[in-house]
Structures are given as structure tokens and as C-alpha cells.
Image 1 (cartoon, rainbow, N blue to C red):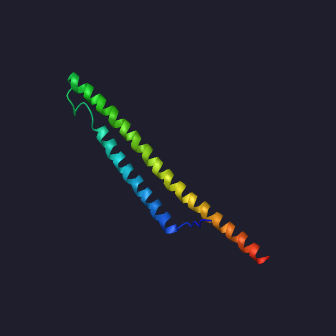
Image 2: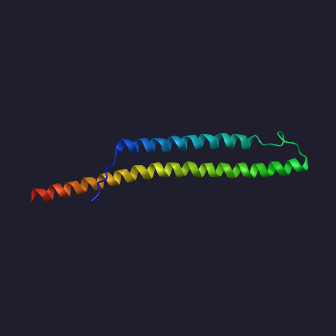
Image 3: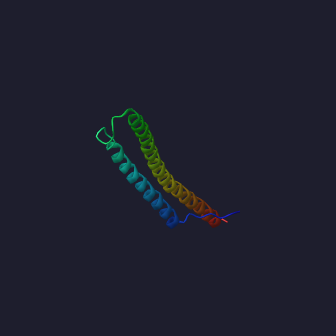
Amino acid sequence: MAEFQVDQEVVNARVARLVQLSDYVAQVEGGLAELIDRQTSAQWSAASPVTAYVESLSDELEKLRLDLGTLTKTLNTYATELRASAARLTAQDQRVEERLSGAWRYQ
């Protein structure tokens, strides 16, 4: 039978990295939102080909912003689930250890 163990330091380091990545992606999303806000008629010519380009650019930038928001939420979910999974495994190990130590006492 294989033996598994939760190394809390490793779990904490991985959770911290996920949170750090989430914060970074949120920062990038904020910068992108500022860039989107600057795409006004004062920034671009009103000529027809330019208008079509700006509309296409704005649409793609908005899709990217939404994707970055989704990525931030996903990273936060991963961090939360990793913490919860480690806690469940640790609790399960403790329950098994208690049961086994109790069984040995009665033999």
C-alpha cells in the first residue's frame, strides 16, 4: 500500500503562487480596461476604414478583458479548492490514524 502525506508548506506555497498569479492577471485586466476606456473618437479618425478597425479592436479587447476576468476567477477557485482538498486529506488522515491507534489498543 502506498503512503501519501500532505506537506502543508508545499500546499501553502502553491496556494500563494495561485493567489499571486490571480493578482497579476487582475492587474493586467485593469490595465486593459484602462486601454479600452481610452479608445474614443478623440483617439481615432472618423474615416470609415478606421472606424471598422476600431470597432473590431474594441470588440477583441473586450473579449480579452472578459477572458482575463474568467482566468482570475479560475485561479482563485483553484487556490480555494487546493486549500480545501489539503484540509480534507489531512482530516481524513487524522481520522484513520485515530481509528488505527484505537484498534491497536484493543488487541
